Amino acid sequence: MNVVRKMLFTGLVMAVMTGTAFASGQQGSQDTGKGLIGVVMPTRSEERWIKDGNAVKEGLEKLGYKVNLQFSDDDIPTQTRQIDDMITGGVKALVIASIDGSALSNQLANAAAAKIPIIAYDRLLMQSPNVDYYVSFDNYKVGGQMGDILIRGLKLDQATTAKPVIIELFAGSPDDNNSVGFYQGAMDKLQPYFTKGVLRVPSGQIERTVIGTLRWDASEAQKRMENLLSAYYSGNVVLDGILSPYDPISLSTLEACKAVGYGTTPGKPLPIVGGQDCVIASCKSILAGEQYATVLKDTRSLGAATVTLVDTLMQGRTPNGLDTQSYNNGAKIVPSLLLDSVIVTKDNLISAVVDTGYHTAAELGL
Ligand code: BGC
Image 1 (cartoon, rainbow, N blue to C red):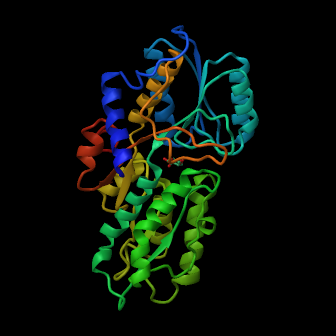
Image 2: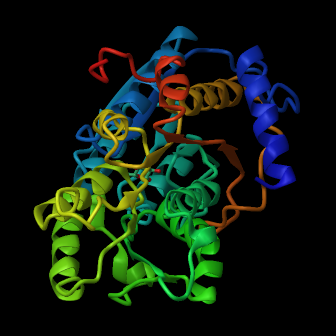
Image 3: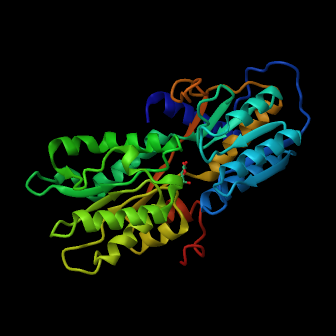
């Protein structure tokens, strides 16, 4: 994490802990009336978005706001309709985790015309001047952690050109701007090993546009993994690792490997695979020694930061201490609040995940 980001993060943690985030720079009249806030999450079919939605809702309700929380079933027309309804329903602010970051320009324009502040949640809203703030994790750093997981798990520092390490690459949804940060962060870490010739991708499929997984669909990734295994691994080439941007993709690509004997055939151990989101099934897999690692992005912190931001705006105050350089959405630089994330392996899973209450021991079957 660079110095600016570290300072921002430290400031945020202190602010969230003390409840004073963004307390300076007051402007305009004080509208302390508690209104209705619209919160839109992309889908209910992924664990994290349910946690995110609930964290934001509960936090805002504790402060006395009313909350209209909707999940969009990964369907863009559903999401646009939900936002239209929220605007006509009189929300005072919108918190939006988009499906396709570029598909909401009309809704954002209507919200801006109605003077409703818009917060892009986790995923940046693209190609629109009508985005006021972005609250997320440091996506480039998350990608770097995905790269670090492979460097560590595959012992890349000890690899030689005589026996290069073999991996395949998967990226997130092409319509989600986060995929760019994850990919770039990971590739910047892995590039030196490609350059040295100690890391290889037998399929040659390396560009983000080629390795993307629309809507983060784990079964689509599983099919692609099956195709790669039959096209490039039929001889005695053994896959050592997989770059995965998301836990369900980690698990489904591991399934594809198991189906052709990885993990049960001598000389074919399960590949090293990381992931992201710390989903329960992946935590169990990590504890069982299958998935190697994941990245924990604590939705509770993201929710708390968002609640503080909304409350600051609703009090007519101007947030300060934001990153005003990193996130250009194609129409403007969006002031951003970027949180920190943590690599989780078998070694720290209990302390990072269970002891902090992110998942209970019972949820992990312990
Ligand atoms: C989020 C990830 C999540 C992925 C799939 C991304 O935008 O940042 O945490 O795994 O979407 O839902």
